Image (cartoon, rainbow, N blue to C red):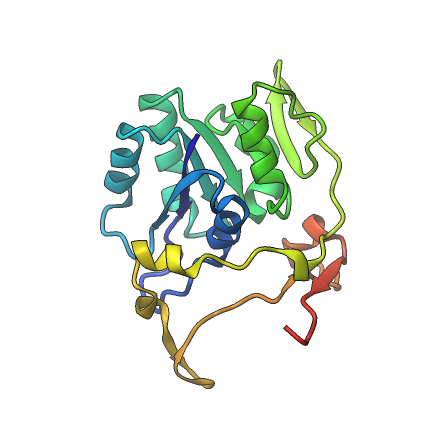
Length: 222
């Protein structure tokens, strides 16, 4: 399998490292061929996506937050389904996880990663390659025989055991310097996540249903 990891545009300026797809890339790095497409930096993301599909890429992975990212995530996924029906569409991110019913009933998305995909995404790819059942893969939602199936949620993994983010791979697609911005910390800073989840249950927050007040961070020695 050859995988496209797409980060839909979320802002027109002050672009930051797309940590969501970079985290997924880390989980499959060295195991499958993948490319990164950042809608924040591409003038025509669909042209880039389509060129990859026409050159044999057959999995379209898309991270989706509510709001601006839907403006590219929805039409591009629909185009993939309409023009290249053999391509497997996989959505992640908290919009997909919270609104999985609408997402899957569209028949444009085949699988939703329900929370962290560090284990779920590579296990799903392996199962699809081997034509095996996906029922035992945690953090997965999918539709089969017109019925939506939701597997069990996995415990948050040890953050110290996660693979390093493949910054060199990202740099081969987009120069890292394009993501470095001026903040109160300095002139050239980058965003980095050292923990997963959130210990709070704020009523206004869409992340709460994903983690249910669970949180894990990397050791401070790292």
